[in-house]
Length: 168
Image (cartoon, rainbow, N blue to C red; front, top):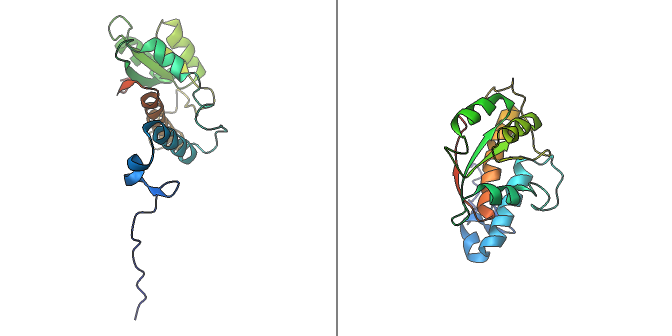
């Protein structure tokens, strides 16, 4: 007879031994948000050296405070490397689309976006993607897709209401 292993009584993934679906009952909102942010950062970008979630994206809170609508904390969040800066400049002019923060995915994009008067944030410790490398199947492109969610989680944790959108 073949050996049949019994299924576990509950799902084993979670934080500190608590399954994900029970976390809300066991952690306050701030503790849960910090734990999820740290979990995502460790899983998706383990090569980054950080101390909790405070060292990574430490200037994001200030950038969001400047870009977001003051009373509601509503903000549009989009992303661009140098290859996508033209899309942002054509579609996200501050006078037309206020309360937008553009996450610059490389130093050159950051310089161009800020030079055009847009609110931009750049984190040098994060992975970058060269303007000529837009292949959607590449590992670095997948890192950038994960970064979008990481920035979204962090912005939500910082108390913003976020509309996440593509630059094009």
